[in-house]
Image (cartoon, rainbow, N blue to C red; front, top):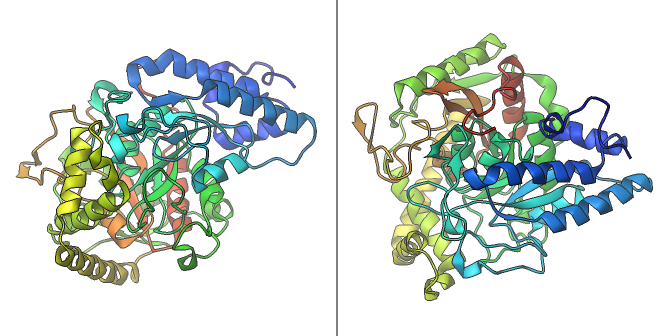
Length: 481
């Protein structure tokens, strides 16, 4: 097997879309071993300054790459991502690879089992090169990726700024081409916020689309959180989503889901004729004007591509953030509350879990009622539109410890005031993605595209059409080389 086609440089190979990497491997034009070695070299070169990875699984990755190469050379049946490097957020259990949850409690934990998502990634033939950085147990009230195991993850566009959280390591790894595929998770914006801050693509699937089972915590109630794809390329995301989506008997909500559609096949249809509701603020959020300018331009591009774009008349309650935290916090306590007895648990995670423990039954029930009312409200909206477009975040990446308390001259909530648009779609369960749509002050700006429940295909169609019209792959961070 050759190392690479004639004239193909190492960096060029790493920056290729994952589906193209898989094609070259399948055609015996690229060795999975050399592809993985190239990724590991790039991590070694860049990651000391960025902190994208908690664990780099070099030995395991090279062994997997060697097996992948043997399978190709033997003519064995191979998966759609065979030999392609992929990173996994360090909250997914990985057999034989350290899984820390970003916590000193699990600093030395090496599971002997895979989460369902990781099992499916391995079955696709992808090669896990490491576990990406996350705040402890994927929760940080300041929405930054930092922990006592690895330390902070820095934004490749400006190393003095955060990637956001909680899938910050995944976003940073993609933005610097350490890999082209990453699995993140999103319970309130944790895929979309760092993807927006780092200028990459991220999709939170519909609730229940991807099974959440077999982790280090207690069974996840799976009400708001979903694992999902993060990539530099929308079509790669469709391929990765296809790999990890679908029912599984280990997930208690499997009966609420059907087999997923063929996302990659539906993605080429474009947006012509789609009805899109555009909202700059969902009726209650504050947005920096430089961010809004870029996102408004993105919404206009959708109209230029043939969609019908209408101003969305909606007025959401600012109290939704409180209801979100009642449900999210109580569920977090059910999942990880046992860690409160361990003195190694960090202060930030401890604060969240103690807050979750304090939520009374009547508060939880009232918040579930508010969630259902929001779902009814958004169901009415989505009966008129195929998609809704908003800013992903109110601001660009901030400096850790300097989180804005006001946006566009308006005082905002300390927890979610600068991210008022993401957690809404965790509460409703709708699929929502972020696409890079421009820059403000030299930092990436993301545009959020949300679809009807279960309709990831339309979200991916719109994102792919946008990417084709305004490509972002060739624009890379200047803070690192």
